[in-house]
Image (cartoon, rainbow, N blue to C red; front, side):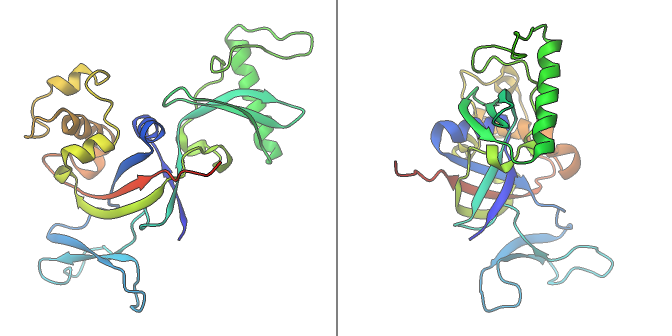
Length: 258
């Protein structure tokens, strides 16, 4: 079993932190050509192409001239694999003597208070300088020890995208329990909720009032459809009209013994 890095949205990271489970959906890249009717899991270790998805065409083989490899590997892995979930973060505080930082997580406002060593000296220096600049820009003044002070979680450092998070700072490493492929508009109400739906009390009015992205009328699927269209619609096709192919995985946080 292996590890695979995944970039989590705020909604996904928040749901995983709160419940310990998540339904992850990502577009198949590139999308299979028109005429593809299924992607079949080839799990036989004895075959030449183990642990790959095989795209089947209506005609058995793709016509010549189509630049598409039928043997597709799922980026979400297989049951038993661990996903290294990177998310939006910022420097919550820094300790120059220890060459370490504390991390704030944007999704749910979680404040990690222990010092996390930054082994890469150049990275630590960059984080330290940039965060110091953020503090000065926010109007904060250092004391006579050249240190700034604020309450945990209230630091002035800017938020950084998930793609920049060092693996050392990752808090979510869930295990894949199931994985598969589907047309994205086949998602169920339960799966849409597990994908990170924030619930009616936190869901924007646009989601609840939108008519059209899905015929179900279910608020969770409406939210998921709008989320998909905003992030992937232009490149891979919209939720309802194009019905693009998507990878999915159900993941669960492993509880560690104290």
